[in-house]
Image (cartoon, rainbow, N blue to C red; front, side, top):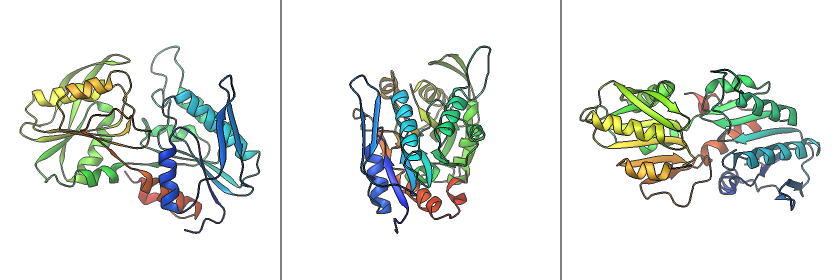
Length: 313
């Protein structure tokens, strides 16, 4: 494509994804130094001229989240002080999204804090994917393009026949996502009703829907400690499900996640490279790339073209 005015700037949180996007667009990554001072502070310098450029900063805020976030804020400030035309933060994974409301006393709304930080730093636009809570888009006073990884997973499950499988939401918060996947794949869907006991402890209690004799696709926006998703897998197995698959956009796999998915007797787990994949993932975990989807969104945003078809859920 014509790279006139377009600049791709990569942070250090997921360079492999940045290089994939660069190759697809045919636009080289801007030469930049992203490092640390001896005391750990972020040190950034852009070596190429980016004045008046349409800059896309590629930086999912994946673990270590705080490092990635401060680095992103520093890169945004660097671009603004370099007189760029526009800065878009490309955050396939938006960290701190779990706290999107005040659901009890004396707790923060950290998703809003991060939105404020990005806006104050000078970002003009945000491109993200499968937010933990879609309403986080409203925390920003700048445009937010919210993509869904559903087209990537649709191809992975193309072998399933209508009537042979059920899409299952592992909790009530995933109902909308499960319904969307079920409609796309031509399948029915069910819901696991669960009760949370603590930050990483979940007790599932009821299954709404029929899974007996059916293959099951458990869908979620992320796998963090894998407590919710593996508990839901045990629930549907207890109700007579056949093969169990998991599709989750953001494969964080922190804490005991690997141990839990190994013990869950799953047929396959599909995640995307929205975050940097761990190197110790089991063989049944398949990492699908969202680089083509993100690259197409960047191409359209840069060309002032509609991106509606990319984020229709």
